[in-house]
Amino acid sequence: MTNENNTKERLWNANFVKVFTGNFLLFFAFYVVMPVLPLYLRDTFAADKQMIGLVLSGYTLTALMVRPFSGWLIDSFQRKTMLLLCYFLFFIFFAGYFLAWSVLLFAIIRTLHGLPFGALTVASSTMAIDVLYPSRRAEGIGYYGLSNNVAMAIGPTVGLFLYNVVPDFNYIFAVSLITAGIGLAVDWSIKPRKRQQVSRQPLSLDHFFLLPGWRLGVSMACLSFSFGVLSNYLAIYCRDELRMSGGTGTFFMLAAIGLMVSRLIGGRSLRKGKIVQNAAFGATFSMFGYLLFATVSHPVAYYATAIIIGLGNGHMFPAYQSMFINLAPNSQRGTANSTLLTSWDVGIGLGVLVGGAVAEAISYHSAFVVAAAVNMAGVAVFHMACRRHYLQHRLR
Image (tube, rainbow, N blue to C red; front, top):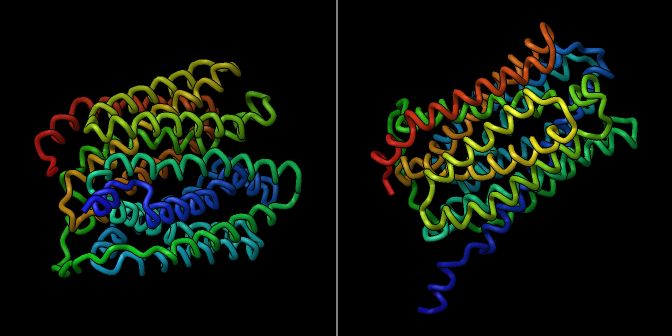
């Protein structure tokens, strides 16, 4: 009995370690190419700012389109099978980048690549919840996010390093392809606990979107809008307007350090049930980071912004995810995760599109001002509409 209890309480069980590692490799492959793609499109195809925004937004928009359906599929079929299928497609699409000889072909490949990515992130996070024991679930969700954060710290830095050292984007694409392949192999070795198969009911809206979570979804979309603007246009803004060389990699590194520190601190409070407090603190704290970035153009403020946003998002995201999960029955964990990530993608996609249009029409600085304003709206929605609703309707 003692051994059984000890096993039940283990956070870092073998399956969770594998899911954590597979998710890290997934996001490392994603983040390696993310900061160099605007430079790739500009240098290789002479794309202007608006064209870059259109091409890059396609990936996010297709991920957004597939997320609601992937949540239903993951709830309805064997989750490991869906996880491996999505990971294989995510892996193989990186090979298509080598074949793109025109901006149109690259846009098609990149846009289609968003489909397996969108489904894979839902499948991976749902698998993580499945392999975590209930007593460690809220805490485990926070630590699971560290896999994204470590990838965010290392991936952009490696990508920009390769861009500066090796003047060939194919090397960066190869790193992503190989990393995704290793991640697929790791997830293949997961041995999840058997779960009762959910009977497939006639399709309805709540199979694709967690209706009790729509308020949280609106707030999340506003918060991710600002991150979409910042993450996609930071490299060009840093080099062309701030005249800083090498600042982008450092920014992502500092943001990721902030994320990791806050995940470790926030994990303890999540274990104590302080979910709403973590969400409120994180969203509000990161808001000040976006305001600082938009209003003060100075290297000290630039790097301080990275830490503030990292600390805020590290508290906010796992708390929001726990809130979505707690509003859903166990049979709709995939739907809850897909709703969270769909909301995130809506904001990211709109941020890329609107940010590119504003930057083209006015300036990148104006785009970051818009990002800060939308972020403030998201924080206001959380405090005015989300907190009370969650406390009244949570299931656990």
